[in-house]
Image 1 (tube, one colour):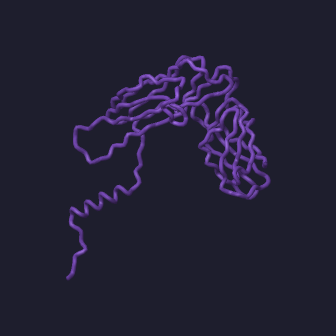
Image 2 (cartoon, one colour):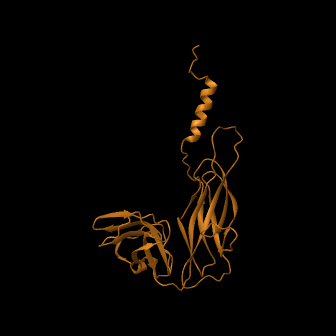
Image 3 (cartoon, helix red, strand yellow):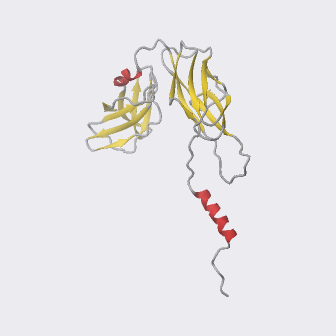
Length: 246
């Protein structure tokens, strides 16, 4: 007996729905923040940013500051206010970062993160669309006022080397300055080629950061080329520095 291979309309719709779940979902934050990073001088009681809603629907939002590790139990020296608010379509809300008493180091920066959690308002009309509530995080640098000069003035002091750590090659940066550095681009070059480094981890003040390398051969003539993100979210001019071997 011959069996038809055609699908009933209901089965076809169910199959299409299942396949749609396998497609990648691209989501973008609805709310925007006026800065990509915040500098909080230690002698200022507060700083502020502006949260905007460029969409045509209202949103509620929750704001808080926590640690780089996304730990909400460790005490931090700043509090976001208001912590919960509503933004109408095309509206704005100023959020203040208020300084709390603390015993943070005074010879170097400390870093924390501002979190903005979107809370979409319920739609009265039934809809088949999927609403995704996103959280945005930006860096907040607590900067002691006794630190002198601009962070970018210390970029030349970064010391670079290629080292074998746990049996694998790593690019190592030693940062003697009191500032954090966020790399926008970091490339290791040699006479035989180059490798773009995944440099999501910042260079830490008065410390060492390591980046694993894909290539296992250590060559002569190594140098790094890099740009960093400045206090205003712009890029510093590209620098080229030699990288030693050890």
